[in-house]
Image (cartoon, rainbow, N blue to C red; front, side, top):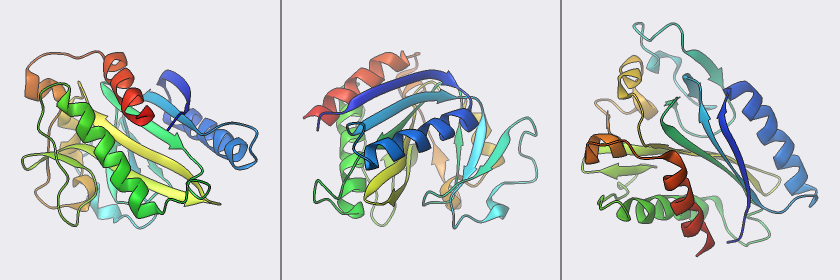
Amino acid sequence: MSLNIIDLGYYSYKISLEHQIDVHAKVFEQKLNDSIIFVEHEPVYTLGKNANQNNILANYPKEVEIYHIDRGGDVTYHGPGQLVGYPIINIKKRNMNVGRYIHTLEKILINSLKIFGIDARKQDKLIGVWVADEKIAAIGVRVQNGVTKHGFALNVNTDLSYYNGIIPCGIDDCQVTSIKKLLNKDIELKLVQDIIIKEFEK
C-alpha cells in the first residue's frame, strides 16, 4: 500500500498524539491520503482503554510520564531508541477488518526483521511480534470511522530497563528484547524505518 510518510523525528508524546488526531481527521475527510507517522518518543508509559493500572509497578521510574489513551491493549513503554509507527489508514475503503489489519502489521514487522537476519514471529492468541519468547514489537490500535489510529512500537536501540517498571502488555513474566540486544550493535532508526516503508509498499 502506498502511504504518505510523516517523519516527526524525536518528539514529545503529547504533541505527537495531537498531530496523530489531526492527521486522522484529514484522512477520514479525504483531505489527506492514507499516512504513516514515524516518531521516536521521550520516555512514556501508555495504557490502553482496558488496561490494568496495577500493571505499572510501584518501582517505575518517576520521571516517566503516564498517558491513558484509546487504543487496545494494556501498558507499554515508548522511549529513545524505539521506532514508533502510527499508520493512519482508511481500512474500510480497503475492505479490511481490524483483525486482518493487525495481522498485516505483524507480517510487515516480521518481514522487516528478516532483513537483519532476525527470526521473528507472532504468538498464538497474543498480539505483537516475538523473537523466541521475548517481545520485540508491541501493537495497539483503534479504528474510528473506518480509519486506524495508534500502531506499533519496535525496539531498535531501546533501553530495556524501563520495562522493569511495568508488566508489559499485561503479560506476566513477559520478557522483551531489541534489535541491538540481538545483534550486539546499534542500528540507525532511519534504516529500520526505510525497510518498514518498503514492506508497506509491497
